[in-house]
Image 1 (cartoon, rainbow, N blue to C red):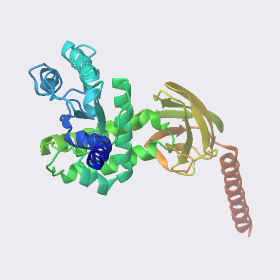
Image 2: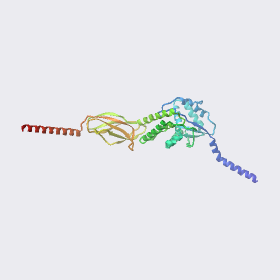
Image 3: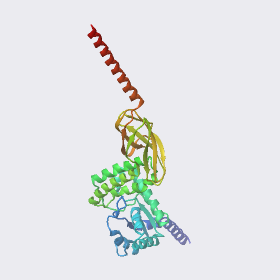
Image 4: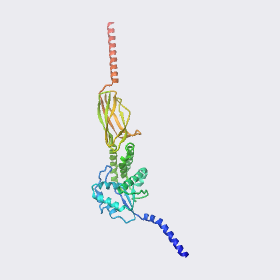
Length: 362
């Protein structure tokens, strides 16, 4: 009896161990389906090529991955940047619509892992901006969950390429400077309004991208960030002031979809004019506001005022503009000074005349 009992106990332990080991072994044996691609649109949303639609066909590179996928068990590694492009294309392209529907069907029971948005070169982004890498993971996960209607994992140890990509120095410089510019703008503009641009900045460092594409996107990022700054602006103008105290209408624009709290700083470039203290304003979403600012004329002539927005910490935001002013009014101070000078000249002339008369009589 002892031998059968020992055999039963051994079989029980083997079965128990297998319950714990088999999921791990199965996970290790999962095939990976990696869905990512080089950008097909730039940071301004302009199409770079027409290759994406063809790639989504059942015979295309991306199409084959979902229409004839590898057998289960399998794990999908997906870049939300690619999903954003396909979702935008699906508005008018049947291939994109079919591809998205097929992806949901094929991946419904599989594990889906979010690749950081734009699949930036990992070693580089970890060195340049580790906090942004965490943001790219979160952004990709959120977008994928919304697109697929299901939970998506983040595995920071997951790899989607086995080779490194050399990123051009100009692309690195553009990435760094524009990342700082977006961070500065977000101190006044609600960060959600800048999420798309902030995420797409990762495309400058995409693994597998060519040098030409990196350089193009570096220049394109400068334009995209400049466009974002331009959404919050002061309209330059020329004004003529004809009285000592006058209110000048200044137009302020907020093209963001949310209100923005900002300070308007006006700095005269000479002493001919005086302006009040900086004023903190709340600009409504998608608005054009005309603000009447009191000016005090000190002396006639031409002058200019530097106008700029500043955040709560006093740092300038966006581009400054020049308000040109023509001052044709004589203020009381100038009038009193001029009158006083005239009187002094008159008295001096009278005194001189009296002296001459006295001398002639002698």
